[in-house]
Amino acid sequence: MHFAAWCVFGLLCFLLLDHLFFLGIRETAFQWYQHNERGQDPLLTNLRRNDYDMLIMGSSRSCKALLPIHFHELLKRRPLQVSLKVKYPKYNYHFYSRYRRISKPPALVLYEVNFHLFSIQSWNLLMQKLFVDDPGISRFPLPRFSSGNLIADISWLAAAKPEIERFMQDFISSHTDSRVQSGTISTYLGQSESRVRSFQPPRFRRIPYTPFPGIEGEYLVRLLDMFQQDGVKVFMVILPDYIGTYHTLHGRKRYYQDIQDLCDRFEHVTCMNFHDPSAFDIQNADCFNDGGWGSGNSHLSSRGARRLAEIICERIAAEAHQKKTRY
Image: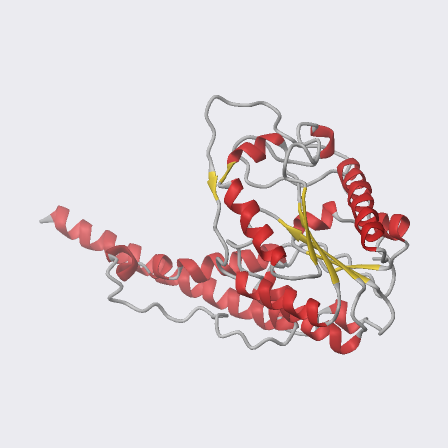
């Protein structure tokens, strides 16, 4: 009898703490979103019609790999770095649809491509700063029951797991440095230190590829179509990964084929694949800031970013010479 009573008491305490924690997180999220959902994307707020003639678009990978200062020096262009963590095709599509209303179309776009392109969703708050009415943005509704999952039916925290994870992603991403340029060329040169895990363990996890279209692939098609309408030359740059990360990623051939197929659909789009070991020195740890066996992500170091920029500019010049034009 005493044992049953203690079990009931324990369950009631669990439910009380669970519901209190949920309501606390929900209120914290509400206050945080209310404070942060203000203002326009600063890249658009400070934009003037003739500020830039080149865009660099992508995620945090291109923040460290495709640096405006290099392309300003090597191509004599004025690049705007649009890239930031959790900026994926949906964000870039909506950003450019607004950019083209304010500024003339760029002559050239470098669009960074990485293995996770079709498996990650663009950041909610960035979408809201573009004034996008996105029905997918939710604000912690009270859990719906009869989910078929006993734990989720009992625990509000378990039932709200997707919303809590989304809030944590938004909160962490909000502290990323966007390096807003305000009409100037970013002089950021990348990171020189290396945290590469060069040791190859006997066993390591493999990360599967999410094929096109995935979560936001259709927005990439719309964006490339918009570039074609504006006569913009686009280079889809498949960034290199450190050798350990390279072997961690499972489904590379399908990944390359998906990107090449996308490029082939548009006359003004060229694919540059630096993920292939023959195209970039992916075994050189000095060229990378992080990555390794079992790691699904790898960023270039300042040295690697400079080398990549030189190769990209050489390829751009070669294609321009072949087609007797200028990019």
